[in-house]
Length: 129
Image (spheres, rainbow, N blue to C red):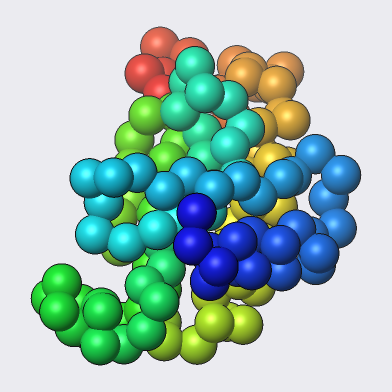
């Protein structure tokens, strides 16, 4: 783990208020850059991941115009264009906001009293929960 990703993780954890959200180093040797992640359920793949290049030159060398990018994975379905920016504080705050929203959504029951899944689909049409 490099210093900049350790500091990113520590800073994200320091300002995350939800007690069930912890940011961990999720860097993988195959990725273009390091990352941190708030993982909610490794079996169903529910997480918010913040990728971070060390600087803009490193990002541009890999073909990116932004240092930070957020990937959201909900029930195994990934959104790779969740958010991109060059502003470190904005990236951390957005990742925390998305993690808080996901945590709240995951605490909802799969089906409510109207037989609608937590993603708003009727039980007969639900393939997401």
